Image 1 (tube, rainbow, N blue to C red):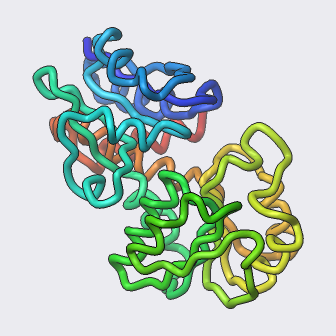
Image 2: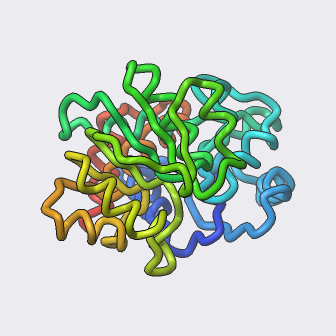
Length: 263
């Protein structure tokens, strides 16, 4: 029996155990998936191996610490320094990032997107910004302060903090911060959020399972929006494929993981 987990703080809200266990049970794969509430990201690697895990997912705020913990990082994650999926490969910790492709899957319904504003500058923001730019989408990043914006400047994003924000038109505004997850906060001052919403066609939030204050404002303005459920599904399917080392068909993983959202 293989054991998998999700690391995060908070983590009690995570739908990931239900998603992956649904796949394992329905497809008769001998594995179990649980949650690990991890306060100190620097202890991720030690905790991973002490629990005897075969693999794991990593959520906020530990995705950059997960990158540092890896013995090897593969694929898209190498470019961005952010890992959300870990595999135990013969005692070596291998890191991947499935967030970005999961998000691209989620926003397919929005059609052609040319210009995006990302709120926040953490691991998810890095993954999305880099992935958008691969598709030649113009990316702007807004963060509370300039401190975490250097990465985005280096890869060619437009950047601003709350003091230097100015009105521009966007096809999509995405919240990658944890604002609204455990509280009723907005990801930026209300006047900035209102202005951004009045100048966009679509809105997305990485948080799932609730209508955050950010999404509520979008709803009030009749803007088409999505929470993070589709992104969660997309990244989860890709992560599960890595967990089972492609022993299960991708379409079968997706079909059974979708069922977890009906429970």
